[in-house]
Image (cartoon, rainbow, N blue to C red; front, side, top):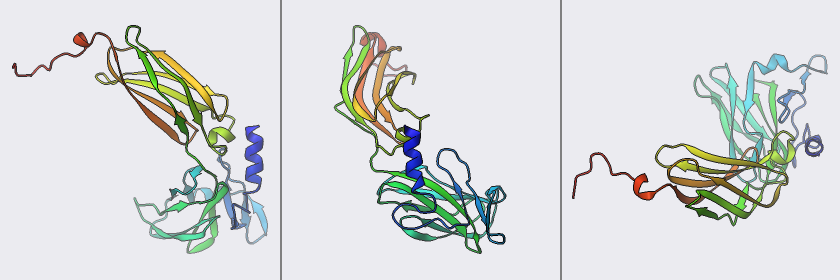
Length: 260
């Protein structure tokens, strides 16, 4: 079902993306998730051909999923030196030019205000028939966790977080990609040793109510967090601290303390 949703969404995006502007027909287009470059237009023959010869020339890099209203960085991976690249988006069209230098790649921060299928492409300014494009998904919301409260039983070292609500965007990676789950993780990090007790669970729906519970493994104070992951973005909630073991024996005085 996820793959069907992604296919339908991207069918509206390739070469006629988002709300306005089209990817040029001579662009090699990197498909979202698969990483496959679809094709390249040969100006001399008027036919589509393999994009592989141009892939080694320069690549456009950036996130597959963006949050609407937030600027995200896109940059060029290229061996070219002192070359200018022009950046474009399907929503705004021309973004601007930037110079690619040795150790300082050409880049632009690009924002989309509307959710759905989108794209970014870049052309080398001295030869605009060489174009590299990237398909994107713009989602509306970051992952969200509400009403999460811990209950800790010191005598048994058992930690519970019960009946909290969660939600991820319907255009998130976990919503569209069959290989990516909606994942919730409860973690207790020992404040002294840095060791962790972790419990993760894959969730069956994009929103709902769930619970997690686990026993702390290590003596000492722990920092408790709860993290919801949508495949790209995470929401982490701080749930406070918990102590495993005898507080008198757990908290030892410092070795260089001055007696009172």
